[in-house]
Length: 354
Image 1 (cartoon, helix red, strand yellow):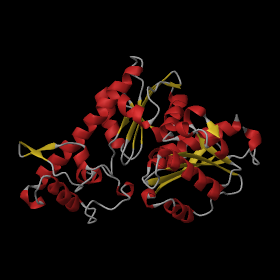
Image 2 (image 1 turned 90 degrees about the horizontal axis):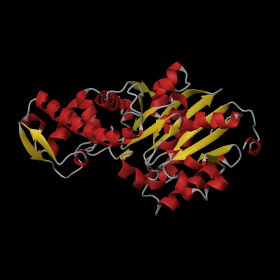
Image 3 (image 1 turned 45 degrees about the vertical axis):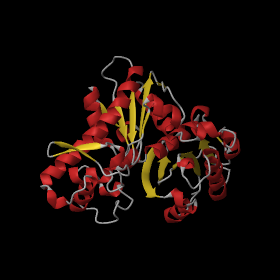
Image 4 (image 1 turned 60 degrees about the horizontal axis):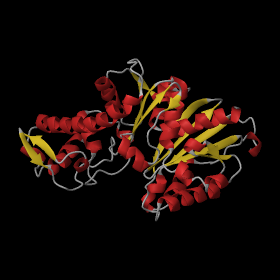
């Protein structure tokens, strides 16, 4: 593989995760993550959203830099199909970065160039989970990797340094519990439950996008506002009062109808119900582990507050992905939030040094 590159021996690798809603970027220097960030890129509005993000980020290819890519954005409805999405994103990569010093992460097929990637669509599609879980397996040997982002949660078991996943595609992983379609910021509350207790009565929810999980985190004091990059459901204030008003609409009420403590109780109920959804998937996936209760839950993504609670439910120690990987101290938290980008950067660095 190394002979393909004009820059053999280079120590700078940039990892990119091209998502449908966010672009994640991580820079690796001498085998260590030194920076990472996440940018809002609503890909459903077109690939130009990614180009605009690149302009904001500045120079794409510093001297001595290798760029490594994974993706989930092929699912965006800007594309007619998954295959069209993969082709479109590969075109974008080739146009913006070229083919020299560019790697694509093809999951179970490893790394490849842009040309070869065009024949590996089923391996490349939404394979960012594979990178983070594979890196965790190499570094932690045995455990349960959980990455909770803004809309989805990936749950993968690894044992003796190898993944023991049961599914690979999104469709397969939905069936195995390895993909739970709920997240920490952008998930609509109507997708979590159909009924919620209001003053002791189970109340049907309005089947509308009135509130999302960022509102829950804000009300409960668990949300880092920097992680909520999209407008609120009503495009109004991102404040506790604003989130309570949106939550109230879900049960056909105004915020003044109940005391603030009652709304906090309802938000806590939603959060608990979401955690049960994730726990159901994790309980199924964890059966692939040994009975060694010291095997940790490794948490990544903006939803780590939920993952820490999950670890308690599973009676396993919690380890942050940012603490597991080689990273500068001031980059660990950001690297954990942008875990797939950090993972492909580190795996790419290992590949180039092999």
